[in-house]
Image (cartoon, rainbow, N blue to C red):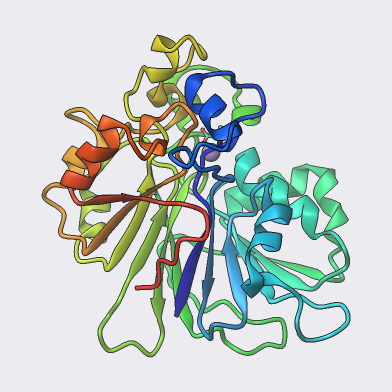
Length: 311
Ligand code: MLT
Ligand code: MN
């Protein structure tokens, strides 16, 4: 099994096109302490040759360019990308599907909720049903994704519900229930090699609104967890004058604070803990920030584009 971070930033990327904040200015100026990051996506493979994407970010075209593992190698028209597994219907998880519209066969996996959103958006019909198979994945049931030729990929994959939020463009009201959505709107992904006696497990959770006991039990003992690192503080965007929304309003728990991710993980045994889906307002994107140093001391890593995260 192999796993590679294609993009480590949250929606908007780093730098974000319309942000003139200090960190984005540093990134734009090529400051080595503020490296660019594209929008969140992970590539996983059972055989090291054929790959499945977890989410198709709006930056997918650039991510494929940057990663030789995803370049066409077999036929005149071909791709090592055999499938895409979706964790939600947010723009930063699905917009990259529109880059995959050149009559290339692959399989699209997602919960009934997420595939339902794609079905009601006719723009996704550019992924012709003749080439792209859509497969609904029940929550909590491990399955082995198939290559296009029908062979098993050698990975056992399970989607599980996590506290989250409906996609921004699907918000119908502002009550907590309306915003939280339903089971399957926001999921995490657990990946393990089928033939693995060491029971290695990689868990990818790019969006999570709260830690629960059930989630703690699932995370405990994992080899690698890549977890929602959107904001450092819940109100950092408000305080910086960047926007009116808190992390809680956006469906993301914060990294710091008593209810934050670092605190929540202190009693969860995980061999390697990595933050992903990091917003451009989060100071951990800066290699020289005090927040980054605090994370180092807590044993957390900050994902970057191209980071190998093979368990
Ligand atoms: C999020 O992670 O909160 C969403 O991707 C926000 C968005 O849709 O822009
Ligand atoms: Mn997002």
